[in-house]
Image (cartoon, rainbow, N blue to C red; front, side, top):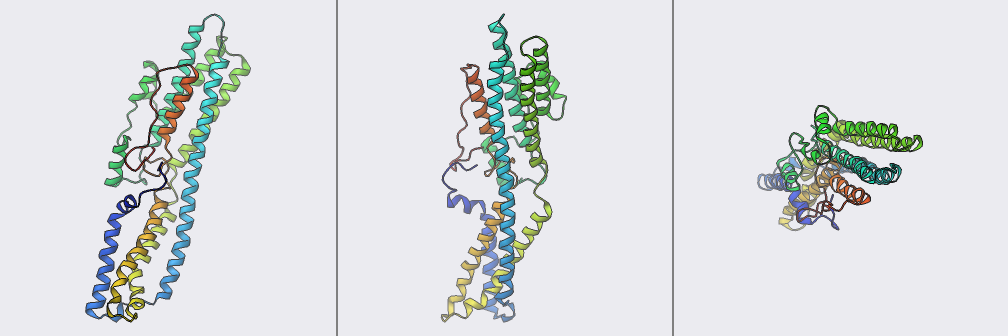
Length: 335
C-alpha cells in the first residue's frame, strides 16, 4: 500500500515504461510510414474508433470498480481481524483465572497469545503464496525481495518463536497451517475448561471468537483463491490493445489537415499520451484485483499483523515488543 500522499509521477512512468517505449515506437512508425510513403489508405475515420474508445472507457470503469471492491473487502476483513484479535487478547487475560497460581496464569496467557500471533503470521505467509494468475514479472519479483516478502516455497520457521516444538512439528504435517493453529487453540481452551480455569459461559465466549477467526480466515482465502473472473480481465485487455493499435491511424487525418505542413508530427505525442492513459487505467485495475500478492497496491497485512502483535503483547505486560513496520523503499510502500 502506498503510504504517501500519492505515487510520484516518475515512479508511475517507470512502472509503465516498457509499454510507453512500445507506444512511442509503434506510433512513430505509423506516422513515419504515412508521411514518407504517402499512404492515404492508412487513414481510418475517427468516428468508429471513438465508439471503441467510449466502450473501452466504460469497460475500464467496470473493471476498476470491481477490482477496488475486492481490495476494499480484503481491507474490511483484516479490520475485523484487528478487532477480533484485540478482543481475544483482553478476553484471554480477564477470563482465564485461578487463585492458586499467578505465575501459572501468566504462562497460560502467554501461550494463548503467542499462538494467536502464530496464526496471524501463518495466515500472512499463506496469503502471500503466489497464484498462477498473480503478477510475476521480473520487476514485480524484485520488488517483493526489496520488501522481504517470500517468493518461493513458504518457510514457516518463524513460527517456532511462538509455538512449542511439539506444536510446530504437528503443524508441519498439515496443509493449512493457520487453520490448524486455531484447532490447537480450541483444544487448549477445552483443557482449560476441564481444569477449572474458565467456566462454561467463558468457554463459549472464547469459542465464539475462534469461530469468528475461522470465518475471517475463510473470507481472506476466498479472495486469494478465487481470481477476478478471467473472462472479464481478458476481454478488457484485448479491447484496450485493439483501441491502442487503431488509435494512431484514426488521428492521422485530424493532424494532417492542420494548416502547417509539419503538424502531422504532433500525432505522435498525442497518440502516445492517449495510449498511455488507457494502459495506465488498465494496469491500475489489474494490479488492484489481487490484494494479497505482496505488491504496491496490496492490503498491508504484514504491517497489520505486526500492529496486532504489539497490541496484544502489551495486554499481557510483555516488554520485548517487535518494532513497528515502517513504509519501505523511497516510494513509501507499506506491506
